[in-house]
Amino acid sequence: MVAADQVVTLVGVALEDQVLVIHRMSVLLAVLPRAVVVLVVSVAVVMRVDKRVMNIFNSPQRKRLFQSMKMGWYNFAPIEEGTGIHLTDQETPYALYYCHQVLPQTIQEIQQASELVGSVLTQVWQTIRTLDEDTLLFYGFPEATIKLVKYDFLAPFCMRLDWCWNQEKGIKKVVETNPQTPSFWFECTDGNNKVARHFGLREPDLDAQKILKRTLNQHVNRAALNLGKPVTDCRVAFTALNNAEDLGTMRWLRNYLESKSTILPLEYLGIKDGEYLFDQRTKKPIDILFMWYPVEWLIHDTDEKGERLWPALEQLIFENKIVIVNFGSAFALQPKSIFALITDLGYDFFSGKDAGTVWEYFPKTSLSATAIGNSYFAKPILGREGEGGFAVNSGKISVRSSNNDPWYTQQSYVYQELLEFPKLEIDGKSMTQVWGAWLYNNGNDKFISGGVGMRLSEGEITDNLSYWCPIGC
Image 1 (cartoon, one colour):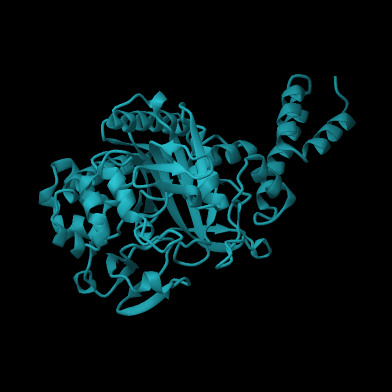
Image 2 (cartoon, helix red, strand yellow; image 1 turned 30 degrees about the vertical axis):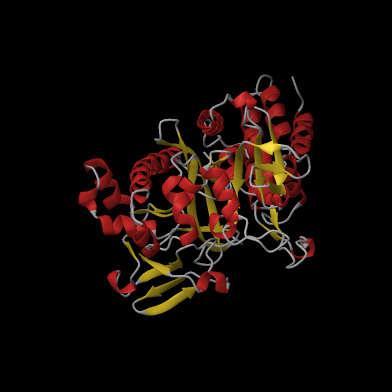
């Protein structure tokens, strides 16, 4: 039998580390009277609440957790223009030391709805490839991208959907597709599960990692088949901008690939005499490339001589000397104007089930504000991270993005019906909630659901300063 003062000692030590609490509880449950067991369990529950309400933005426990997860972007550091140096003295928190408990049913509903949306987007992608140049220009596709959009027949590998999932108001609408971004990928696939375990909650999605691994390897094998050689003979590479989040996410993604691969910052990518793509550090050619970098930026990039890189890269793709995964086909679904195209195509264009999905989950969207009415949300066709967005309510601008780079604000806009996003009270603040849901190509050009996750913003518009709010069940 364990004495009462020993119980206090054990619980007191355990309060520093939740794993230790659970271990001590499992021992005590076997030897203590029922009344004392209840006391120990109560203390453990109080511990969990205490950890939740401590400083969720900045604490030693927060730093320890996210560093143990090898998440180098748990804080956001702006980059100094011209040097590319991260300004660590201006860091702001990104990952919250908190785990929001949600019902498993909510996650399942978002995943099921996302798969239905994926079916519609597959048909839209196939349709976009058949549209003539004038129509694609009308919907805001940059002229330089049109040949590739129509040519790339390897269907998109993956994408992230952003949802307004407001159960209280009965609003469930997908507001954006993001096929060309590594953002919020680790968080939805691995991160939520790890944080949920840390806080003693159930993991929200045990299958997300398995689905990613299976579909990733399937897609690489398809790319190799397209090149006419086995994947074991292909040199596979991952590249992204040289920052903690993008390159860190690529390092994480690479772990799911069964074949050999390398990773390189984007600036080391080169084209050798128009013959092949290669890694400038090793001089080795690349056959299959995961390049998580926006096509709409790449078409303007130049080499050290000031010459555009796009024509040479495009030619390598057309000559089947390189396969870039999730590239042209993914970009076909990146412009926000594809939502306007879906509205313009109308319900009759889609099959019965897909038509029902459009009606239920797609907000009315147009290239004309007057077609929506006097209340809408406006965003640039090639917008990212909330840049240049603004809301109009009853004819008056009610909120505007704090980020308004001219590159975005000078673009053509799309206009979407104004939706009421859900709020979450956290740390004494009412924050705007956006759900993200990942979809993967199952190998037969059907999208299946992966992980989901939640971002929170202090303002009404989700931007690059939004928080990741981990979830558990």
